[in-house]
Length: 457
Image (cartoon, rainbow, N blue to C red; front, side, top):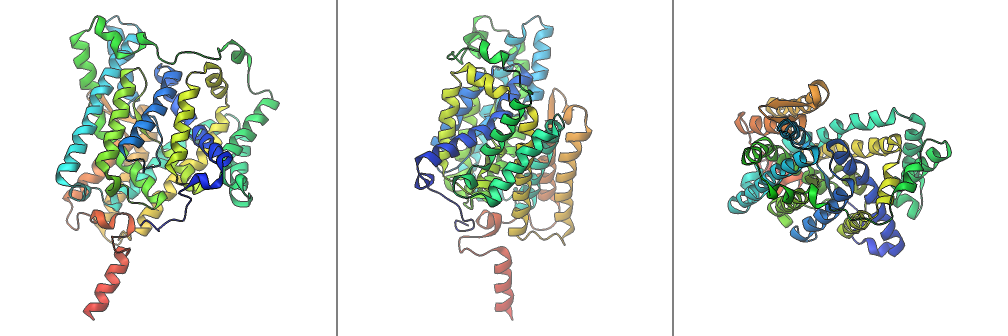
């Protein structure tokens, strides 16, 4: 699988200027979605940027610097934040203090990542991953892109001209561009659309003059440490109970994201550095972020799309983007400048990136030679796709409430898919050694089957 994709694994060979620009491109790719979570929940944008960068660096250290993943704000916990905030405000707490209690619940949920990592390490990745074969993970990756597509279209509708300009520039730069232009199509699309919006008078820069150049991204009154001054045991327990179960859903999403990344890069990260390490890195990043009032972290599909588009797989580029995020978290003026970016610009770029994610899922199914003449495989894949998309766009609020917890369509689809694949008669799933298409001999399941047939004849 290591030779499956042709990509650049040493970005510094392109030169330092291009290396820096590639890092900036990944920064732009994650920025819109990362700041959207604090804007929705009421958490601080600068704090979010800081711990997105710190969390990404923590993840890279734990995963032995091998996985080119960026960790940004997780959308899976939005329902948890909302429910805990509502309960705490009803008890007379302020919005900020209510969010502090919610962050305690997120920190508790992060502990589940460590439990899962221990299970993987103790019983072996192959035994656990038998429950996550390509017939499950492929549709999951497809669903990730499709469920995100709605937000991209919604943003595009605010100004289709800006969105189309971003899309056209990205496509033209990627297909016909030469040299550096071909490597940074996303950044060029963002800049072109942003400049056009400024020329059209679509951006109000008055807020920019009011923002300070340098500021502290951490506010102690908006961290879990503020709760320690006068804790409410009942609210603490309520927060944990309301948010902790969401970890089961985010772990499934993490597995799907890792499958997308390894399929894009062409290296089996499930085996090396190991899923137990990536889960641990994600868990530590989420735990630390929640302590200081930032949203839970998760591996970002937007940056996976950039990897697929640029074919530059060097993890150092991602780490550079993380450093940029940390530095920019201390500059409220820059955060304001990026925050003024038109939603249509973000929508146009996101439309391409989300489609690229789904395309990776399709390629996963093809390269793994999943047999869709088998009814069991059809049922598993069909229900994953229908449930994930149906709940996202059909259920009120984009989720299904089970008690105090709201499960996203992707989470429910993953649970149903894994359960059906485990109980339906037939092969439980390919072993990890043939995960995503090829085993240690470099042969796909289809090639192995042909050789077995020839030997029998």
